[in-house]
Every structure is written in structure tokens, then in C-alpha cells.
Length: 257
Image 1 (tube, rainbow, N blue to C red):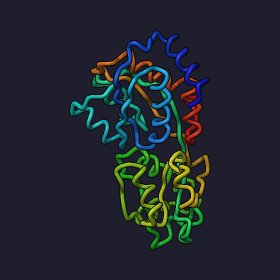
Image 2 (tube, one colour; image 1 turned 120 degrees about the horizontal axis):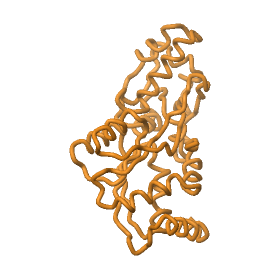
Image 3 (cartoon, rainbow, N blue to C red; image 1 turned 90 degrees about the vertical axis):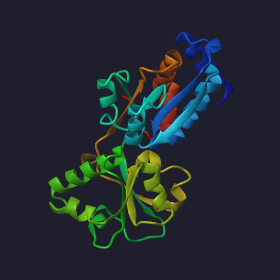
Image 4 (spheres, rainbow, N blue to C red; image 1 turned 90 degrees about the horizontal axis):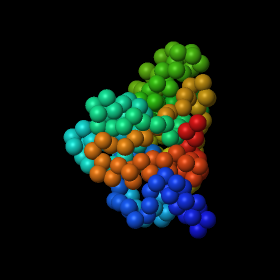
């Protein structure tokens, strides 16, 4: 982050009523797919505010369970509303705001020819890696397969044939991508944002038509038990600001609006 951006963010935080003298240590629970974007956002935010932001990245379902069991955090950023809304209903979390959106993409090892099209996912013997169905990307993946089946493009049993090829179900999307990077599968479904600069040399991508690939919405909110509510609100506002949105788009996310 250059000096100009630090100054701009500092001015923005000042307008939010967040003086640097109130610097705090924040704990942010965030979906694994946000690892790169939020790490950069956190550095920028801390440089301007004087805060220290610590991240816990994991599958949204795992983070929700930890919060329900009393884990201490100030902010929760989930990859879907299904893991977010129950915490709101329980009074543990403020009502959320969508701060980013994402789409799915198929990845396969660059040196493998097993999967070169969407139809290939259903070929007998293909080794497919997915996230567990409780993980947001795993849920989105299965819904996408259902949409393809209903369209009849590759047969009404396309989803069933693809799911028979699943050889591993992972606890978060980064583990899914890593399996393919290491050549431990023929294909996987991940978010577009997970095709990071470090992953690109090792994988090929196969796009999913938009009609089968609805946008995944990411909500963010402040925990009711936060001991640093003012700083937590400032972090959320920064994520939603033009600077925060710029970083998210840099890492492959679609903007909040």
C-alpha cells in the first residue's frame, strides 16, 4: 500500500470517528476463500488505523461452529448467508451487509488431459475433488450441478454421474484447490478468486456458463460480544469502502454492488 493510499484511508477512518489513539487488536473470522484479499486489506487497514488485525481463516461452517461454542472474535465474514444468518437470529451477530460476491470455476492439473470440458466431469473414472456439502463452496457446487442437470444439456442425470466421481470432500475451498495443485485429483470446483497467482502455473481452468453459475454472496458483520465494537465497525466500513472493494476485485471477487 503506497503512502497516498495510507493517507486516504487514515482520512476516511477519521471521518468515521476512529482516531488512531483508540487502536485496538481485532480478531476477524473469515471464509478461507478470503485469505489473500483480507490479508492485504488487513495490512492496509492496520497501517492507516494503528490497529492490529488477526485473521482466522477456515470454512465458514467451521467458523460458525466455533462462534456458537464461544470463540472470541470481533468480525465474521462468511462465504454464504446459510452460515451467517443463524448467528444473527441467535443475537450473536449484527445483521450483515454483502461486501463481495464470487463465481465458481472448474480447475484441473495443467499436465492432465482427463478433464477439458464441463461434460468431462461425468466421465467414468474421473477423480473429482469437492468441498464438503456443509462448506459454502460445496453447497454452491452441488446447486450448480443440479442446475446443469435440470437444463438437460448433458442429460438429466449429469449431477448424479458427476457426484459418483467424487474421491475427496474437503473442509474448505483452499484445501480443494491444493489437492489439484498437488495432482491429487483430475478436477475440482472452486471459486474464481481461488485461482491465485501462485495456483495459476499449476492448473487449467474451465469456465461455467453464467446461467449455471449464480453469484455467491458474502455477508460481513460485527459480533455482539466484541470488545472492540468501534474498531470492528471501522474494519467493516473499510472493507465496504472503495479501497477495500478495489483489493477484493484485484483478487477475483465481484464487487458488493
